[in-house]
Image 1: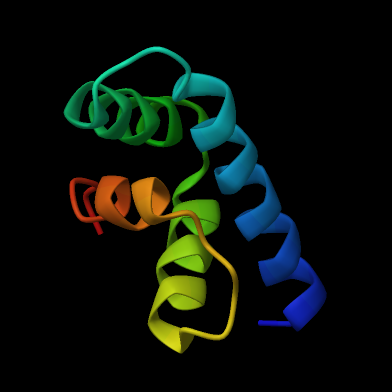
Image 2 (image 1 turned 60 degrees about the horizontal axis):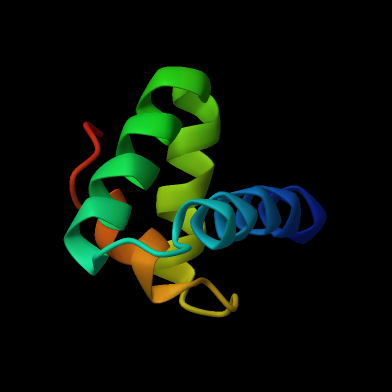
Length: 73
């Protein structure tokens, strides 16, 4: 996968985390991030997120990484 596509996926995931994190406990944020990604992202997009996390070369919000662990591969 191209770095530009993975950058876009990471950017979107990070934005979701930032927008859902305000005023909530960490575990609730993780649940909401995972739910949003599971509901609204195509399986191919989720796979790209997993790839970006595995490469470990992108600045991914810790909440996104934790939420990804709850997603179905």
